[in-house]
Image (cartoon, rainbow, N blue to C red; front, side, top):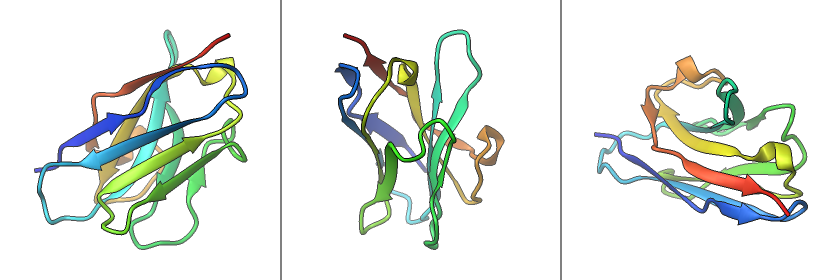
Length: 122
């Protein structure tokens, strides 16, 4: 069973940084592709970043390229999202997702965390 638990959200000033973590605590032996999405109030869920299990280039949404970095631990069970130069428009609930397949669409992922709130405000 896959159980994704996010942490690291909070309130930060514009230009600041936060690091989100997402751990698969379900105890399964299956390794999965993992990604981050976000959803702001009254907006569609938006792709942020994805990490392919077998390695290779990570994928990023256009609005976060050059500012956010996705990475994984050596055991491939925790994914991180380092967010730098945060802007007010980055304010959203951030969701961790995992799947046996890789992609940049919500529909590509069948396991989801409960989300962590990120608020960028002065």
